[in-house]
Picture 1 (cartoon, one colour):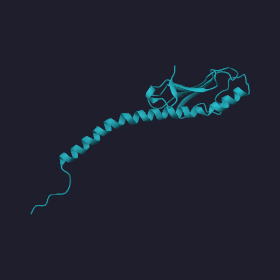
Picture 2 (spheres, one colour; picture 1 turned 60 degrees about the vertical axis):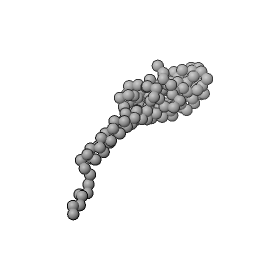
Picture 3 (cartoon, helix red, strand yellow; picture 1 turned 45 degrees about the vertical axis):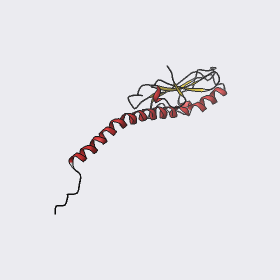
Picture 4 (cartoon, one colour; picture 1 turned 180 degrees about the vertical axis):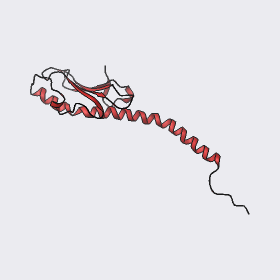
Amino acid sequence: MNRPTPGFTLIETMIVVAIIGVLAVIALPVFQSHLARTQVTAGLADIRGGVTAFESAIQSEHATTPDAAALGLPASTQRCSSIAISGAASDASGQRIACTLSGHPQVAGRFVRLTRSSAGQWVCESSVAAPLLPVGCAVGS
């Protein structure tokens, strides 16, 4: 009486490895895309806090252009290689808070910024590809 030996045959193991390989080929680009989008969103979150301080300066009618420190923002973060402020608080519109992104190759060196419109709303613009934009952001130049 011969009992079959327990375990997997070589062909069964090869099929499982092939299936895992196909799943990895499909999942890796999707993962990379989500990682890049997360980094853009994190960069936007890093500069979003400066909006309130900038609005306060605008309402106080300060004539100067505040720097990042005056708005409570660091000069750089893990996701922003630099944070730049432009536009005087006394201007009617056009004030900007910009983050030069670092990290994933799809977003490194590109920007995400908040620009104040004449209606007093802060609009998000970015130079990253459209699929990587956070909700509410548009492709800007």
